Amino acid sequence: MLSCHKALPIVAAILLITLLPAPLSARDTSVAVIVNPGNSIESISMADLRNIFMGTQQFWKDGTHIVPIVRAPSARERDVLLRRVVHMTDLQYQLYWKKRRQAHKGREPVAVVSNGMQMQSVSLESGGIALVATSDLHGGVKVLKVGGHLPGSAAYPLKTSAVR
Image 1 (tube, rainbow, N blue to C red):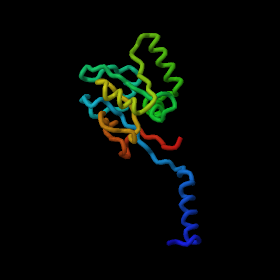
Image 2 (image 1 turned 45 degrees about the horizontal axis):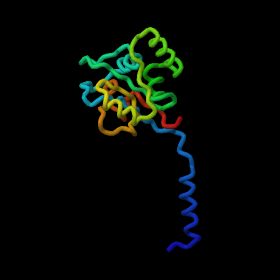
Image 3 (image 1 turned 120 degrees about the vertical axis):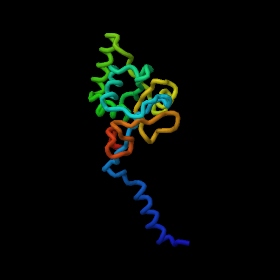
């Protein structure tokens, strides 16, 4: 059994490690593009991804209506969509869709509050597509290659810092 004098430094070290903040050099995390498992697509280009979330591409090659699903404002996945895919601020994206609605041009992406809701919507909707943190992935959806690369590869284009 450890004496009180020997155990104290060990306990102090454990407390110090657990109470220190995470390193500021954030690790990269990937945000996966997911579709319904019945979708025949395996890979998507950044240009096609942009066209889908801008409403200018409304059908998959097999004729299925595309149903883009996005996270509500301030979610990390939405930030990736805005910065890396559509190249807009959240306000610009909202105003863009307001104008499209007024002109009756396409269906606005469905906004949901959680990755779980995105995954469920995509798994139920044959034309569904969404961006989901890889840490939240589970069965019932298909992960697409983006620009020929899967999430986690060095060349994968949809990464973001884990620290905001």
